[in-house]
Length: 362
Ligand SMILES: *Cc1c(COP(=O)(O)O)cnc(C)c1O
Image 1: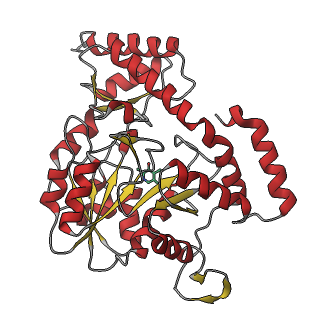
Image 2: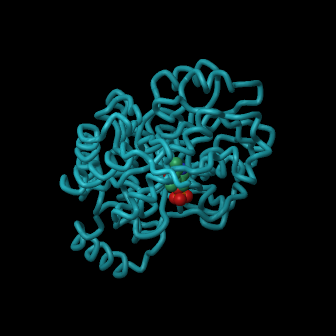
């Protein structure tokens, strides 16, 4: 996809080198404005990566030691990691079997006296029931933060990922639907004061416009001008790229046999299919056989967060849906430039592998 915007990238590179302003500056401001507009929020703050986006949001909300933050166990580790980095305690919840996403009911049952926030993840580009979750969070006085690092442009009933809670956190890691050419991230919000605090925390606690007054004990988490210029060059293509992913997944849906179970993605038109996750029996055998047919697949994720060593101590008990899913999920190839022929090839090989009677030795 970077190749699609080669000329725009070269011009961005020339502009950035001409100004010698490599961090912050005009390119960053322009991208922040464009990203806020795209996400239908009023503010965006560029930061160094998606993990920082979540951590700095929690810190700016005053969440830390003694606070609990609800997170789904089926997510990339950074969701839970950011909670720990902020000094708070992750409270893991299970996911629904048909979507592998959190539900309002699962969140509700985990809310306790120390719950300060819930971080809801638009995992695989699929959105949980955001309107109900937002209503629940506000009724219970719990801050709703979105980890939208896999949901650039996803919608729930027409409303954009990142725009539901107090803040939406994005990563622009190169593999994401909108990817930089290095690490990058952003927070979007309608709360100007929150945006200002996040910006200050990520810029050594500086007061806006006062480079030697450090009003907060902050840190360094800023967006590079070059990354911002690359992201601005790619952003106009994002909707087309997401649409191409939807077309590919619709084709998988038509072609795959019922033995290959696809996830329910809720508001279908609203998913941006960062991953196309299916569930198959005997996953490791299936994945190896696909590999021999030249088909690369992934597993997102083979170990739920609450079973990773540093996070076990936060697990209150088994989370059976996520634990079961970890052994049967498989992420099929999906990217904007995948061809119909490639989808047909993957589908027919996968159908064969899954339905072929297994050979037993001995
Ligand atoms: C990629 C990702 C992150 C973290 O982003 P980085 O930019 O790698 O720090 C957080 N949450 C989810 C769900 C992600 O997929």
